[in-house]
Image (spheres, rainbow, N blue to C red):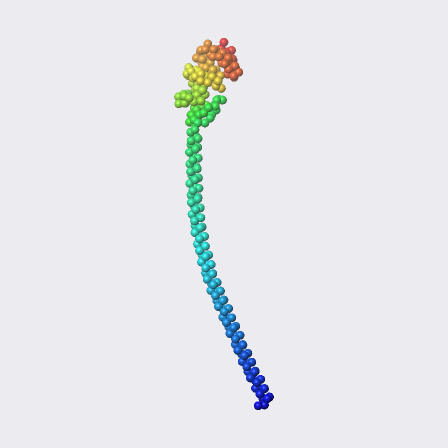
Length: 246
């Protein structure tokens, strides 16, 4: 065989073999690429499915959380309403207690001061005395006699009694009931000789005696007044009265 021809055949065979190998290599590379693409697609699909499931789970969690929040909001509203009811009940109870305390306080004895004398008196006792004094000051002397006489009987141990007897005597003097007026003025002096109105009571006794034409008795009373209460205004008036009846 011609050497040149043989060499060509070898070259052609080598070329065919190289082409075949190249085709196989290209085919191999395409398969790898397809597998890579399929694998990538599978991963993407898996991630999409996982994302969908996670989103669904997240929505379920959010829905559950919202339900819990609604339940808590309802419970809070219920508790708020109950708290308002309790506050209302407490406020009503406190008001009732305050009303009871005020009623009890109105009926409790309290310190009062009359004609310079301080003592404890019941509210009703004070109200009755003030009412009787109001009748006297309005000029209703007959009615005030009854009011003060009833007061002394109703409250025999009252700290108001010296003052009540003084005003009772004055009411009787105003209605010309001189004998009883003298008796009540003397009762007042016996009960409270240091009373702020004691000098006036002694002078009033003298005035009653003068009205009864008991000049001798009036003179003795006025002299006693000047001796017992020398610095009082009533004593000064008594001195002037003594000068006129001598």
